Each structure stands twice: as structure tokens, then as C-alpha cells.
Length: 94
Image 1 (cartoon, rainbow, N blue to C red):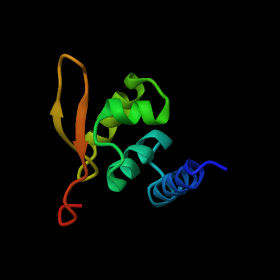
Image 2 (image 1 turned 180 degrees about the vertical axis):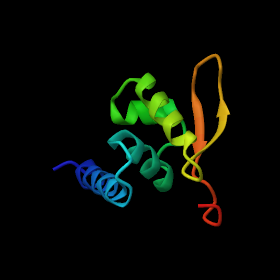
Image 3 (image 1 turned 60 degrees about the vertical axis):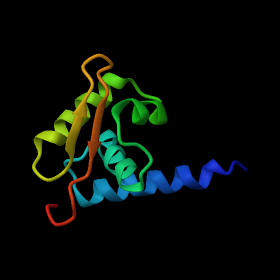
């Protein structure tokens, strides 16, 4: 059995838990938040590759999260590559 299988299962369980806490989160949005929390990915291209989905879908979901207060912070946008770097807000702001 692959060493990655338990990590994938853990990631998916955390995504499901995040959606359980906030039913407004899409699966991709929950994945973005979990990836940031675990330190797996902090930019749109990395998470798109990790999830095996189109970068444009990640950008759409990131923008949706950024519109909500205290959920996610956009820290940098690269206009040439369209890569968006993001982070979770500090705990005292969340």
C-alpha cells in the first residue's frame, strides 16, 4: 500500500470536517483552507497541481473565499502567471 494513501485519506477527512463546520464551503474551497492550514500549499498553481484540477477553477474558488471576511487573505498576485498566493488570517482575526 502506498505511503501517500493515509495522507490522502487524512486530507479528505479534514476537507469533509471543514465543510461540516461551514456548509457554505465548496469542496475546492475547503481543500484550499485545509492545504493552507497544513502548510501543503499556499498558492493557486500548487494547489491546482496537487488536486489535479484546472488553475482557473482554483482561482474562482480563491476569489470566492477572499470575498468573505476573515476566511482567507490574498497576499500576492502574479499578473504574468496568474498565480495567487494566499494565507489564513491570524487566529486573533479569525
